[in-house]
Image 1 (cartoon, rainbow, N blue to C red):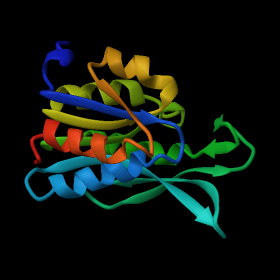
Image 2 (image 1 turned 45 degrees about the vertical axis):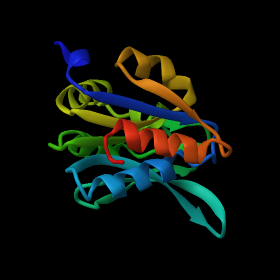
Image 3 (image 1 turned 30 degrees about the horizontal axis):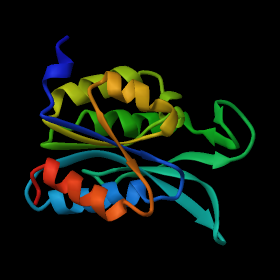
Image 4 (image 1 turned 180 degrees about the horizontal axis):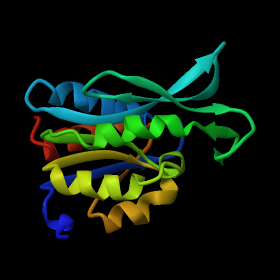
Length: 172
């Protein structure tokens, strides 16, 4: 498969927790939706009384929200979170969408607990002309092997990286 040659732009956003990776991707997706068909998924924190208790997956095209992980014990797990494999179908469906800009948030350990995530991701990247992904810092080498340019996000460079992404995706 010649997937590496298909996408015009593949941008991966990585950085430490709490620097605004998902926020950046959501703002870019909102801007892009004015010009392009946007699909994919985002992973959003779930908080209870100000404390993060887990994550939900949201399909960008349909708005479908599915629990991905919660604090607890059980398998499969990533750190203190139990991953709900029921969310895998939401992720897989979101990666099968047809669009001009594919959003993937994130390429990380929880998503890779889903059977077939790697092949679904590879297929989606091949079939999408533009891809913007949040890449967990431990998965940057994998993303680079898929042809992603990795941009390291910090609180200090957030605006600069946002503007760079908007420009690279032709949204400016």
